[in-house]
Image (tube, rainbow, N blue to C red):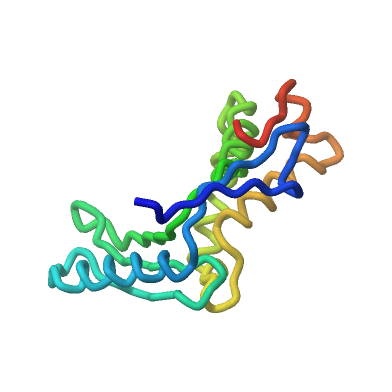
Length: 165
């Protein structure tokens, strides 16, 4: 509809690959998130509700709280608007690193640390805590820097260590 525009950023080159980002301007993103928040609030659902409207942030976010199926607890959903070629690149790198551990111990340690941080309310980013992804990165750093490293550097497992995946 003409709301997205192509941007070519010369500073966003990495290894000869130029980032071509579809971006949505902030005003449009906030308007879309407000419409979504109003629609969800209008549902009157006890299973899904708007928890926070973080529209003044650099990347506006709508935080929802939902009930997990079967009464298994609360699910937190963060929604933002916009896209980029590199969005999710860190997730892909972490996934590749964790897959390199054939036993699954690294992934299990990441889950354990995330649960530990959540129970101690250390991952409440709105209140100044670290994101759960930050705790995953700390675990990976720890495993890579042991006297006998338990996880290789990313470059060692990827001959084509590209950000795009």
